[in-house]
Length: 219
Ligand code: DC
Image (cartoon, rainbow, N blue to C red; front, top):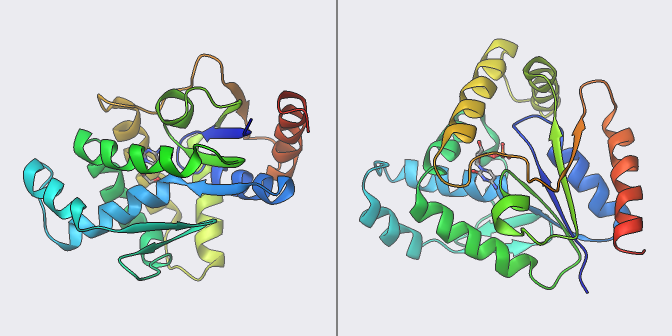
């Protein structure tokens, strides 16, 4: 039986770092579903397609080829990892993510990728919608300020020019959009373990989850 780990939580809760470290330590695949929403957000925005043009979006998504390689994606033959990481693309991702047509398209792809694998999948709706029968479900939280500080540090370290206020503002906007949307909103699954990461290092969080996985998946 595969061991699938769902890690959900809001922007900047430490999901990505925790999921990557955990996957590496376990030797599991790693799937970043937020990157997939960012890919779609950037793709539709570059084509100037309005969020209300559902048929047009459907047509365009048929031309979009997202290939999964462990931890990363190739989009219509190109690697666009750096382009999708800006706060601006985050906002577009979050906007288009509220559309059923986009969610159906990506949820299907995410299920196909994770079906038979030992995998760590991170996102907003993994434990509730994408893999509701995941062997381990984790929901990470942290205060908006702690999350903005983390994101700010990460982006600055990568050399991206951003202001702290801009990041905090982006996080507040996305929290609202992501948790208030009608379908698959950001929500803790009833059977998920909630971990508030505000006062812990992400290594400590990984250690805690690692122990849970060992027990649940009998590793
Ligand atoms: O994890 P991230 O910040 O890269 O995600 C970007 C946006 O994509 C996020 O604001 C909401 C959306 N998203 C989603 O709706 N469902 C997911 N499973 C993952 C991300």
